[in-house]
Length: 419
Image (cartoon, rainbow, N blue to C red):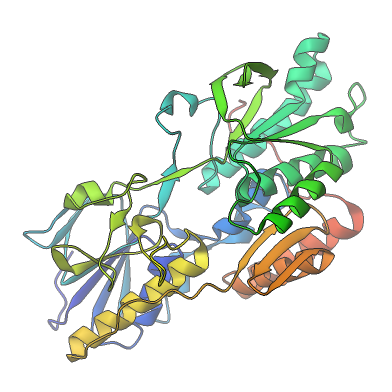
């Protein structure tokens, strides 16, 4: 990367997710040069990725080009490249194309799937973290119905129409509800030799209840909503084995050709790049100002960092938390350049939302707890509001209105290689 024409502090931000973009925006107008590095050229609104995977939305509805987002911010330049390491002694970020020097570094590299030491399960149970994952899962789901339509063996047809989701957090619950609605409503009249409504959707959670981050009453509401949709909810037992033909749970074999993983995440290799102290999920244990211990000019945020709240508990790995951390780091860099002290980071938890299919969701705002249609309406408004770009907000609103009125999903395209 060429040096700035006028030597101002250079801030390199690795990752253009919620945290990275918030940090870049917080530095708008600051006397620094910002270099935003990402291996993809778009920002993804991950909370709605499951809707791409279940044919509710198209990828372009929930993504926007990074350059378009920051084009009005004159002190930001964008580099498309994959970061392969960091040289803290030289203060350089290493990419597959160049070495980028920095005065301040912000690591917002996100997370990937975690299989708790059973990485050999990944080919059989893909997770959902990026657009490629979503379109591959959509292909897998829709192809299961297509193959079942042609299958003459009853046992193989049953396995094709059995969908297993491992993990009862928000992603798992949302996937299970959406697949159940897809089978029982959207596809119900599209086939001649099978009845899609006979499909089994099984949600497996190792813990005692789904949506463990929510109060028990809302977890129970979510379970009942899933069961009304026809989802089989199994809690209290982890998956023992997983292969191309299905899973085993507590000695019971469940035949399935479509297994989806929503049970855990692990941080990116950022801790390894810096040889930093990390937790079991690979997240860097940061200082109260979100800097990396021993590297006061390097900050880690979002899923890359293990941040403690005011009670000493880990800050949840959700988009609002990453955005707060990004905004804080942008402010602390501004203040350091100006010679101003900044108070330690303080996380403010505004609540949790999760949807369970059409017209049903749960919302936890501490003293205020909602479920059913009211929570679903609030969930819809919140997600549309936080989408980037007016076009995306309009398109998603119209798609949801159409789906609500007709039970139809407009993105039922099988693309890519069959699998």
